[in-house]
Length: 349
Image 1 (cartoon, rainbow, N blue to C red):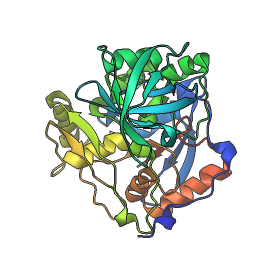
Image 2 (tube, helix red, strand yellow; image 1 turned 30 degrees about the vertical axis):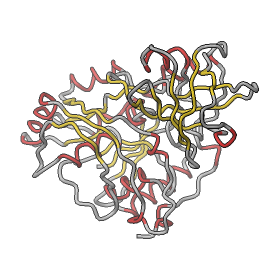
Image 3 (cartoon, rainbow, N blue to C red; image 1 turned 135 degrees about the vertical axis):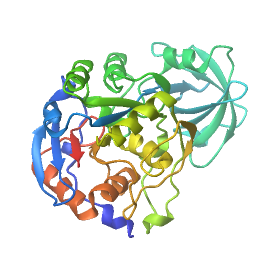
Image 4 (spheres, rainbow, N blue to C red; image 1 turned 45 degrees about the horizontal axis):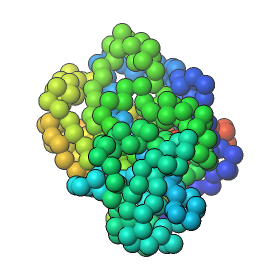
């Protein structure tokens, strides 16, 4: 399939730069994938489209404050993104302006208020902006990031190093059910839920299960190959425990729909599903869900609106049908929906 088929026109002003004051006030586009019918609704009305016994599958990963700033001896300030920790207090990171930094050079990891927090030494760097830093501290990576880090908002949301704005983003660029730290991007479909709304749905007979997928920076990587099949999909770590696997399997056996909240939850479920059942497992997934995929366990999907020519849009097109998803996106543009991470939601069933 040609990657260009996943393209669409989006006015910049529809890219949400701030979350709505109330999470559940987001709009909800409801798409019937059998006939392509579209209904405009509100996320607070989600229960209207669910039935008792349906199981919403949440991704309980917790976003790290992975965006940080460094300063060279010259005073030049660089922006970084933590990717993963390697043995020996070594960090794998992206660093903007990396070209000028020499191997072996010492830099400062700046705190949110002052640039005198931690020293680090450049070990290796690549042309793609990735590098490894030896952090000269005995403190844990979580302690350091909690002190120096900012929310790792995607590049289409414009932010500087304002600490007040960062504090608000730390609360809103995180699901209310986040538990297991490890993501450098949020599972954004879950941002529309509040604890009160979850309790309301539970009382209406909706079941909830949790999986974990630590969303990586590769989730924002655009597809640049001419053919979709030639794209090298990013790898992400996931886990599903026995309790939640049993919840999902029981709901499926009882005739309830399995509805992942977000493409990340869907990616986990379709990675491990076999004959409409799943087993508890920890692992890595490189599953690339593209049009033509046969879904094994997922019956509906709650998701946000995704970037053109992205692996996430490919997944949505695989589930809804390419023509249906593009019609829905064009409808959303005309109706002035808010797009991307802080934007509105879709229910595809």
